[in-house]
Image (cartoon, rainbow, N blue to C red; front, side, top):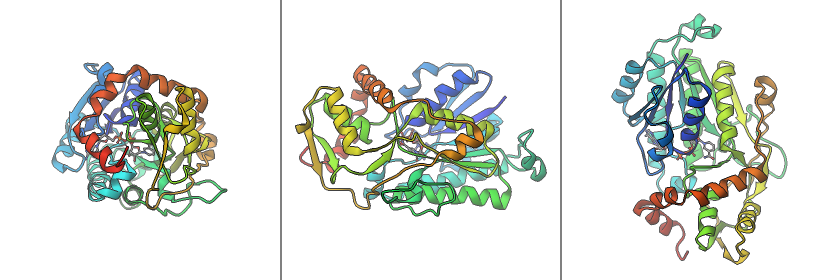
Length: 351
Ligand code: NAD
């Protein structure tokens, strides 16, 4: 039995995680704390609204008083922290909020977890040090920086973030580590590659390209489009986090990846082909400053030590995702409101 606090559970990955956990663990209570920024969408959780073991609380992770109240009022045993500003492009335009949410917000949660004295039964480390609830920080492979043509990210690599977004995530990772070393807070950090799947906000590469393609709009591709990412289906990411929640060894970091490296341009062309649209819709635009060239994850630690492995093949996952956006036209329409349109016109002038 767990009372699991999920932060950012109205966003893309968080909402998929909440729905999966409620199905897989009907005896757990899930408390979803989300402030509902432009990226948070409560409609993502319609199917679980009213479930006896699910509660939504609208709160900001930077608000110490509100977060303490959540811990005290819900007997929290575990935290999975998804809440973040998550878009690299926005971090270049407006970095400050990435610092307050991603770093300070994480510290507020860590402090509450530390102060809320709850020992995880069965965890030797917790018993020995009698320290707080278990804290899982959802991080990103971007904290490692960029790779050359070969090699993969392993958990022991130094952190070399290149964008304000990845620098804020790396800082949060270090704060999580510090709470473990200084206060013996039981923790895990997961670092995953780029996710795709249902409910992703259409500013990110795959849903942006799918939606523009559906609407016969130009597809903005940064630079030469040869930036390589290691794509992971969101359902696989959620199952990996579930594995770490249950089997993660206290204090350990786990990379999560789909063994699926692809250049951006290949993905864009695949989407065009699947929707039967011409390649002339591609519009190459000026590259993002500090754009990392290649990411690739070595996921052997989580696969060999915890027994997790990705199940989705990209060929199936991408078609499912395109179908999802075609079927959920209203979901997309409701998101494409004033805030997003302003952002889009600032980012991609002339498109
Ligand atoms: P998202 O932007 O879709 O969702 C973020 C959620 O956090 C939103 O619901 C938002 O309302 C909420 N939030 C933001 N600020 C908050 C605050 N101050 N208080 C409470 N809630 C707040 O992001 P996502 O793509 O679902 O990513 C989730 C996590 O996974 C992030 O921490 C991100 O860094 C990490 N991650 C994402 C990817 C990816 O490909 N999407 C890859 C690696 C790591």
